[in-house]
Image (cartoon, rainbow, N blue to C red):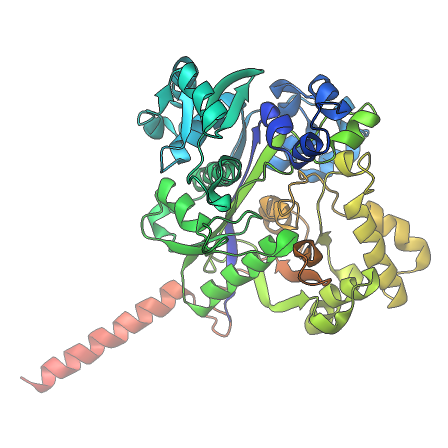
Length: 513
């Protein structure tokens, strides 16, 4: 049988330093808790915010957009922020966009005239985007430029959300309804940022993929935001909103939510759609989260560490029919944390690995890599959460020892050889799928044959259940056979069918003579 394949990927960052202390959840909560303004984080935060150049030259960011292989991080001494590399803004399927241009992209992404940029600033953003190959046509349509007096008036009298650039007020985002709590200016800012970063990711993915945008017929959006109104708070649809601006004119789509595990859920759903023949090319996309900007900022500042959560992230990938080359998504080999599996680390990891190992007849050492929760330890360790990918690898190794697949003295080597973390801590962003950018390198041109991808999520955050969530799937090297079960290539098979049809037609013609 033929399985779906990963055909293309796009990974992007938008450096948004002025959004950290305005829209990040840590800053928002600090303002609520300290209405008198007596917050060390808010007063001192600006001193710890990085420049755009620092963000571009940060090793983990260069890995995230695909300019460096993740294995190179192992050669760089930690903390990585103290050991910058010579970075590049653009990658074949990604980029790190500066804040000026991202604010312009917010205006382009706005369908209801909610985003307003001060005229001189707006024209600077427009000029910059007119030089961007992916947005120069859209930039020509930018028009929501207003006076600074308009912006101040709407912030002071109409609850508009401010946009700052280099500490100067340069724009605002208006509320979309006078009383609907789901359409406040702050919520609209969150949703428009998610949409804009999703568009940025989608367009970069399309740039580096040999698939025409009109050939994508379904889009799944899997971020952690929810758009809707007072009657249907999370009704959606980010997917079609992004597809519209990215000019996927022949597609439809929907949103999929599952906290941090959603991207791997979306990968499995997309691959299942393609394998079933329901859709030929399915794009999965997720924009980033303003709430996660500076999420660990208080901890970072207390340890004299820069605020590393200074970028809104996004990703997109496309799942397509088997082309005989691209990595294969084995939808017959999946794992899941089921309702009755319990919530201990050992139980959840066994639920995500045992069904795949048993189904494929493999042991732990025959999996060449484990793409788990790929959070950047430069961020999580000073934030108090430790090295998450390393902790997952230790648990996997321990399960391997218990199963007799590894010797106890091989455990450290197993962990050291594992896939490290490099992704921004934007909730859903790190969960397994950042590895897809490297799948073609490792599983097509490299020496890996199979990787197990794991996504995990914390459902208890919604206060409806205490359960954890998690799904997993095996990604493997393509055998080169386009149709398993037949040794005839698609081209040869097509020629045979045509030959038979022509012969039949000639016989029919001869019988009528």
